[in-house]
Length: 134
Image (cartoon, rainbow, N blue to C red; front, side):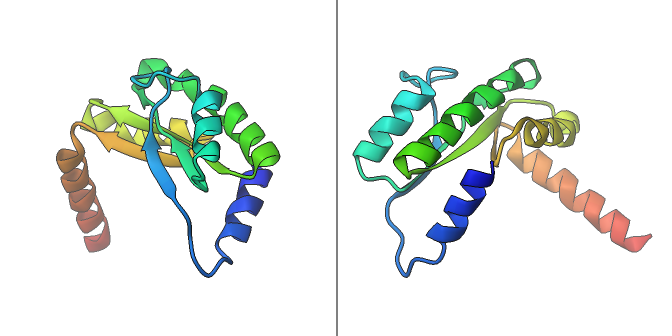
């Protein structure tokens, strides 16, 4: 992931930013293309930063390393900033922190929460509030 880190750091030195898409899917969830094919098409269209955030739950987090490999290759060889991510979909709020940690360990750099976000956010705010009172 060093290549991605270096690419992002270099990109952020630009005065203006080009086209970016931070929420996309491949055929690993509801999309129609291989992750690499989606990245190649994004690059051909002039998109500078492209994240693949396929839907997953606890049973399908194993797709993350697959996306990481393609993102690393695309960033290295095409110059597109390809960011591996995941969209945690309809998982129980109580399992969210654990699945976020697992997703990060597997290489996700962007995590989208789909389904029960309002309950997740409210729970986090309550936990942070009670922690600050202790």
